[in-house]
Every structure is written in structure tokens, then in C-alpha cells.
Amino acid sequence: MKKTLLTLALAALSGWATAGNLQVLVLDKEGKPVADAVVIVVPANKGDPKAPLPLQVTINQEKMRFIPAVSVVGVGARAKFVNNDPWEHHVRGSAAGFAQFNAAAGSGFELRLDGKADGKTGKSAEAVFEKTGAVLLGCHIHGSMRGHVYVSDSPWTVLTGADGIANVEQVPDGTAQVKVWHADQLIDVAPQQATVSAAPAKATMQLSVVPRRRRI
Image (tube, rainbow, N blue to C red; front, side, top):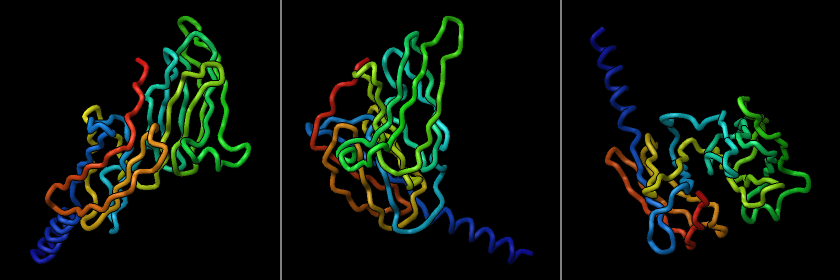
């Protein structure tokens, strides 16, 4: 019995020792922190993430904006779009960046949402994201509206905060490829290699652009 308990304890300790945390700082061309950049970590070794990417999200249309402006989801995720403005909106989904020029005719999706009546719940519609990569959200009626959904097949995918930092937790020990995506970075930033161990690791990625200021 004691031997069995010791074996289980050692296995548990071994499990804890096979993963570490990676902090990634994303800077713009001028060296300033970048919010809402997507950091994708692809470890060479297999492991279990702290939590899977969401497969259900809600994106609101409010004050002529998509809220949140950027959502990170897993493959096959379903997004619920809700129009909280009193006027009609559309949701147009298409490949983002240069990928839009390689997208097949008829790809993407279009939804129409009536305006919200006083005292009523906002109208909603859903879309499913089956392919990896960034999806640009827009509105046919209001050209200034812009949002993004990033669909990832790596559960170690995290959005940076206002400080430009993405904390990626429980990454399997060993080497890992670190990539970054941002809506205004049309040319891909070269990925980096990082080494993850029990000691916290850090990496810095720098964009070649200064992101446009988001409308408030």
C-alpha cells in the first residue's frame, strides 16, 4: 500500500515538473506594449493545457463597435453575435490580412441583425468557425466597424493585455515555437524558439508596425 502511494506521489510530482509558464511581451515598432495581440505557443512535446480554448463566445455590437474587439477561440467554436444598438447591423466574416486574397469565392459568412427595440433583448445570430486563422468582422452598413476572431488549434494561445503581456501557463517542458498575430501586422513576424522548464521563461516579440488607435 505504501509503495503504491509513493508511486502515485512521484507520478504527481513528475506531472508538475513537466510543465512551465512562459511570459511573452509584444512590442510595436516603437517599442511600446501592444494590447490585443494574439500569442500562439506550439510546444514540441505533448502535454495538457491549463484550460482549453473556448468553443462558445458572445460578441456584442454596441456603439458601432464589436465588443470584444478580438476573440480567441478553438477550432469549431460557435460565436453568438448580439446587436445592442437601436439600428440595423450586419456581421460580415472573411479571412483577415493577406489571406483574404487567397480565400475561395463565397467563403466567409454574412448575418443581418435588426436593431434593438427599447426594453427588449438585442437580436442575435450565430456563426461557426471551422478553420484556423484570423477572421475579419465588419458591417456592410457601417464601414468603420471592425473586429476579429482568431481561431487556433493550439490551446496555448493567449491575448495580450494592456501591458502587452501574454502569460501562457502550463506549457510542456522543452522547446516551443512562439508566434504572434496582430490585426495591423499584415506581414507575419518571424516565429521564435523558446525553452520552457520549471523556471518561468520569458520572450519578447516585436511588430514592424504601430497599430492604429482604436476608436473609443
